[in-house]
Length: 286
Image (tube, rainbow, N blue to C red):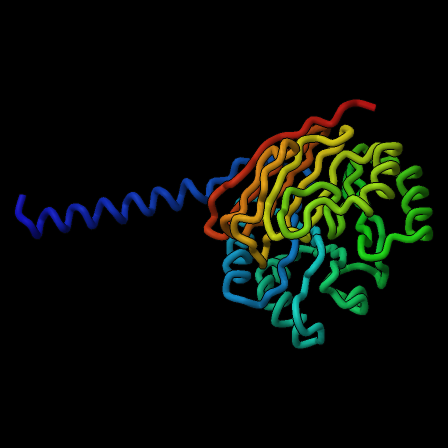
């Protein structure tokens, strides 16, 4: 084989390998059952930078395979300016494909969010700092971890107690458990939220704040996820303690989640489309 032929052969091999890698990297691992509840989880997203658009493009690509119609937002949805032009640049524009496809976003607010943006129509907060809603057999509770007062705790206890759905999922900004080196576990919030979560059978908790992805080993029977890397990243910030089941701090990411009966499946995907974590949770019968 001549030098030119060898070079051409190697070039072809390179592009074939790259193409196969892309197909593998963007493979959906979820069951994708026809009648399941499908949603996305994202946190610390609102940078307006190219990397946020990269993540948003992966969200849209995966939605073509996994048709989720809702997304939960884990706070710090907008960084820097908080006006109408910022909301457009850092939210409406990056997620235009998803919004145009009918995806409904349900936000919780983080420490970088202006509370007035609870009124932003595309975040569907109904003007409230905390609220609840149900989808199929799942009851969601979007909470305010920036100001946990007795009024919110009384509301939360009443809402958890009266919920009739099989699954109870809470989400907010500051994580009760985290190996993030910058923030870590918000113990002050844990001591007030966790007793209610345990008493009233919360199954899963999603949070952000630390700019990494992490899956925590079950704590008091509750599964915890940190997804604070959908538009921000602190590379190398995961410290990986004994409570760490899986973490990823090398690139930005988001989560796809599917609930079908008593089973919850999840897949965490990086900015490049690679799967960095996946698994299944079985809800114990009450």
